[in-house]
Length: 120
Image (cartoon, rainbow, N blue to C red; front, side, top):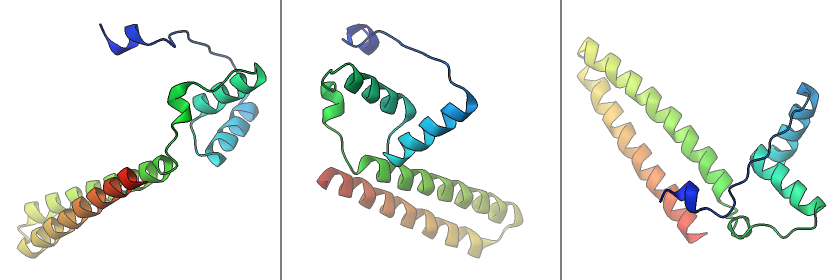
């Protein structure tokens, strides 16, 4: 059985917003460090006087920062990959060595970020 079939919360709700409403909800959800769906679900649960689902009560305060940091690391690694391709195409051995060193540093930093998240 797939995860979605065994999940207790299997009902879906959607609603329309104006562009201005969408922007306001986006900014409010971002300010609270969560996605728009989570933000809207929590607001709806509060209005209906329902307790937050168990999976939302276990919020890791580090998760939003870690996601942002890991996203930036991914972009940096992508840039390093482009530099490596250029160094390979031009035969620049020093550039290739520098890129490999940078990639090693990025990997170490990523591992450190993930370890810090486990400790939080």
